[in-house]
Length: 306
Ligand code: NDP
Ligand code: OXD
Image 1 (cartoon, protein in one colour):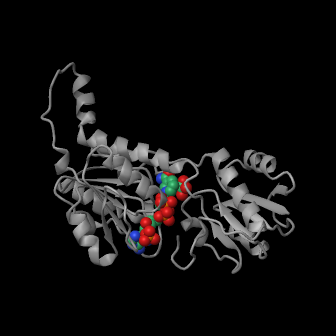
Image 2 (tube, rainbow, N blue to C red; image 1 turned 120 degrees about the vertical axis):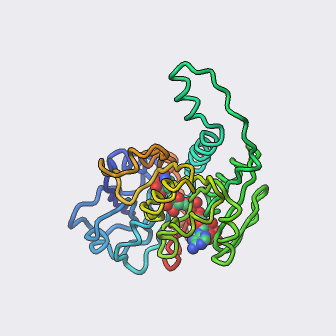
Image 3 (cartoon, rainbow, N blue to C red; image 1 turned 180 degrees about the horizontal axis):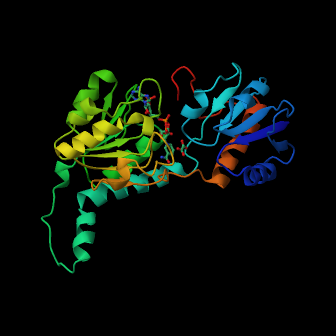
């Protein structure tokens, strides 16, 4: 079995080592133009040339949960596209979002500013019942996040396409219930995949529907957010702030207004990192299962885009 590895912005050597130790029988190599046809590919944002030169792959394994960059390319029709299925990301995402929610709710930034001036100033406790947290997307990451936030006794709501039942989470489904979900939300967390249906979903209209003093946490993709609409709603006072981990252009350009906005916290796409060992182990298990003709989890529906 031949496996080719083609990853932009990622060191390929350690991935090849990790996969090779798990699949000693396979021939695993970094892709180069003109390389022989492989059985499976392990990829992150590969160039179009790679896909054009590898038309007979059985599986394309994406080393991330989001496949938006991959599905933008012209893919051969046959290979099964597989995304990472948690692989250590959901606990990181839960930690990141809980931190962002609590930092905002408990006003830790204000305490940090006042502490810096030697001021022993108590702020009035806020009621968590007045900070309902709504999670857009109740998949592998969204469900874990929603339940983690519910563990801190915030009211939690969730929105998905087909409808879900998640203990402790009030669930809404589909276009028809989006307005009601937003109207009942004060802190909005985006954990949707980026697809033609969800692009620009965080816009003036949707964000205006949030309860007054709303707060946005975008940990999905920059393409979900209309940047100017967020800035306008922060400046008008309808929104109290935002924690943004993902951006339309990454790295976020030095002159982007998000960097310096006093109500925005920027992090450089770190809310849930791909963990190499756990991810390689998951991919190796799935390659073995596919070779044995067994079903695997995390297969992408190309039509839906996730
Ligand atoms: P999943 O595919 O497991 O879940 C996606 C969820 O979104 C599902 O609940 C799905 O609904 C819902 N959804 C999709 N389209 C729609 C729609 N049109 N309307 C309503 N709901 C919709 O994805 P993951 O939880 O694994 O990951 C989510 C995203 O997080 C990734 O695609 C990626 O972009 C981002 N991500 C960001 C990281 C970071 O470091 N910032 C790290 C990892 C991922 P249904 O259940 O009904 O299908
Ligand atoms: C992912 C990411 O999609 O890291 O896994 O953004």
